[in-house]
Length: 274
Ligand code: NAD
Image (cartoon, rainbow, N blue to C red):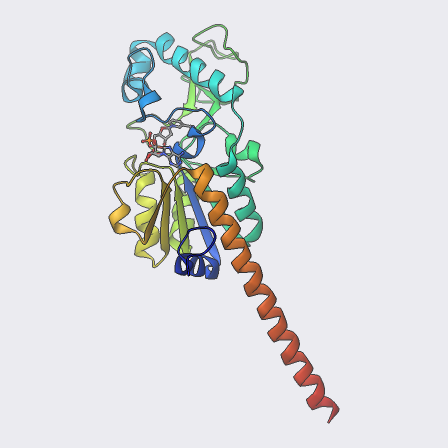
């Protein structure tokens, strides 16, 4: 029988049985909050492709242009609200003892939705880094003035504290996410295109170690053929249904196991009494 969520019973069953869950999100999870993905139709800004702006070379060539693009993105993010997809992930986090949220996003919407300590693989757009001393500072002023911003201590240019194309990931975030991917028994991918490396390799690490990997995306991705299932649809539509069905299933499993425990306890008591 088709379950009410429209999601296959076997998939809910398998995810429900898992005890160590990793959720990996990409820009798709924030697109229903009005924040453009890089490769979607809205991704172009003043005729520039994100790939040509989010690089150290672009920043060296024209820091004002790059900071204007970040200022534009920060304004959109400041006006955005977490959506039903972000909120569904918070409910999942509350139900699993061993849960890790890893995000490629820099917008901070997971934390605003209520997620606790997501592992930010690509940094955060509300922080900046001194290009000379490498110190990291909060940069919350919105809109920014002046552009480009300078370090208050030494006067050197600040850069956004985000990972640009061709740069390594922050070591601690990468290690945490790699560790979580290697030891989880299920992974849910929500809206990464699975082309941005090395984050794109995390589902493969999970798969290699025997985890059950499922993605939620309106489109098939580069790794769809390699994982257990693709739930086609928008995160804000599919995730709440998936999480409802999953939490129902897990609460049913918990009450069954409680009943069994109580039954076993009574048996012990009866034996003791005889
Ligand atoms: P991407 O643009 O390459 O791919 C986005 C993916 O999201 C695609 O697979 C698309 O099909 C999917 N998608 C679109 N709408 C969706 C929805 N409603 N629900 C679920 N999935 C949806 O982005 P990427 O793979 O995340 O890589 C680009 C990098 O750029 C990111 O890692 C991040 O660092 C940065 N970025 C961040 C933000 C943000 O913080 N919100 C926005 C744009 C880009």
